[in-house]
Length: 212
Image: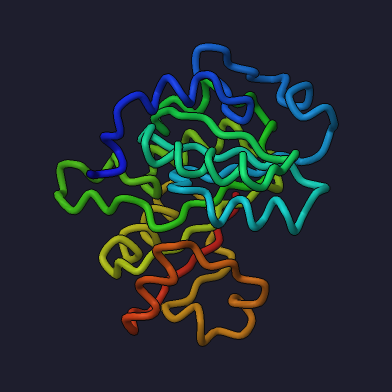
């Protein structure tokens, strides 16, 4: 069974204490959700949540929000949270295109994009999470000193992303085409499930960091 097709997953998610309904947006008031004024970091396309949950455990002084499009994938993350609760993390099932409906201006300090869908056909380029169209959305919610971090094993997507950073009027702070061999950029790196899978096959991992 494909994860995204598990029957009843949307209903389970809607009732879970860790999941914020898209229809009840806390835009501009996320600190009331967490009960503190800690910085907010988000991951768009969080998958099963391994990466974000590891970050949340390491950094209790930061609030994390994971965004995932597919209910049945998100459900796996919620199941892990129920087994090992973490207070400073929440999930949302939503399309990334609607991100400005969930977060206000200057409300987010950091955005993580990990192994995003490459959307290989040229006509779908604007759907890529590192397209200039998405950088325009990130600009609307990130604080002035906020950054975007992107990791992938897809060389074509990475080349596209490097170009889009410039086209979007952003600054490329750092990048590498072999993350695990780059001592500086790999310091403190938390591997996602895809990252573990691809690196085990010998695939190089690409990473960039961008800001305005």
